[in-house]
Image (cartoon, rainbow, N blue to C red):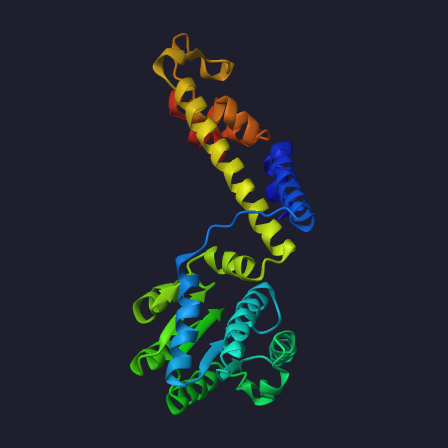
Length: 310
């Protein structure tokens, strides 16, 4: 990882520091009471709709925070979203069930959801068995959770976090009983299965944006906005690089070779490795230059390859 930053020289370090500064500045703004704008994601509207439907039918809401092996950012994002779902469900006295794959995630989820009920003044409605450990084996977990969904006839199912081969098993089970499903997987290979079987899918960064939007925690909101600033910076650099390279690589910009080994008297086109942006982004380009010179010499001298082999 360190070599990656050394290859780009000071510009890579500068961009990294700028993105960190963007995140810290926006966290400070959010903590200072500044209302930072986050666009509402379409899939978030489905959360209230799904809980409302479950309340009308008198059926439970199922939540699965993925199959993470430990507590990490992905599982915590899912639990933050489930805290909002539980808050809405507690107001309507709607039963919930959280199925956990990992014991440490179970402990955190129990504490978070108990706190939600306490904050809503409905601690007596909290059922300790509503947050339960199922199994730490992938397909045993999938089979048990699918069985619970079928037996309880869930009206709403939320699948958020890390999912793998069991994703379609869970999604198809819920789909078969007509449950509204809101899903998101940090594993890109599983997203198509959720799109095929679920009603609403949060794709890519929407998963993290949802947590920030629903909880409005300053650290989450500030981090999200800071990352967006970093993306805008990178987009600007890409646009500037395209324009600069387009101008420099036009036929009118042909230059006379500076490599004596080439022994060329006529002007030649500027190489892409010699543009201003290439110098900026790859300051340590000695190897590129050496490879280019060897290529020119080899083309000029048919015996160059034999000499190198000796």
